[in-house]
Each structure stands twice: as structure tokens, then as C-alpha cells.
Image (cartoon, rainbow, N blue to C red; front, top):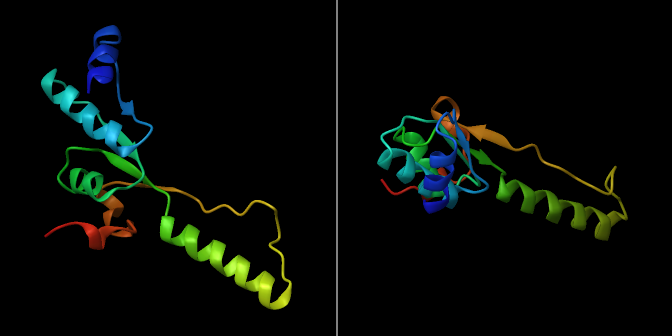
Length: 116
């Protein structure tokens, strides 16, 4: 929150805030509110707390990295190698992250962790 307060003081014409993770974004939201501003804030990690903020309109969005998908892909790659010697097509296997907003909220992987 303090970092965002300082950034907003030094950059009064800011148009948006993109944070390195959801915890930072949640603090930024508090600083933006305290300054009486209306700026879109984007986080990264799609934590349940951030998903609540997206759902409720306090946060514009959060980047979903699909940690469950990462784990499943890694395990399947290992199983394929152990059972049949199959190697992945590349040394680097990537999953595409996705910006979760109100428009595609239901695509977030951790929705089941949000309290009712």
C-alpha cells in the first residue's frame, strides 16, 4: 500500500496499476481508494482473495497461471517418460496464462476456494 501511495504521489497521471502479485494488487487497491481515485488494478496469481475483489469490482483483473494445470502437465510428462520413454516436444513446456476479469470469471481455476 505504501509503495503505491508513493507511486501515485510521484505519478499523479497514472492510468492503471499492474502489480507483480495479488497481494501487492490488494494493497494497491487500498491506496487507490484512499487517494479517492478510480484506477484499474491488475494482479497476478488469481488467489481466492483477488478473485473475490474481481467478482466484487474492486480489482479489474488477475492473471491466472493455472497451477493445477501446471502440476498435471508436469506429472503427465514424467509419467510418459517413465512408462514409455516419451520426451516432451520441447525442453520447455509452457501453459498460457489468462487475464481473469468479470467477463470470464468462471474460467478461474480456484473458484471453489472462494467462500460463499
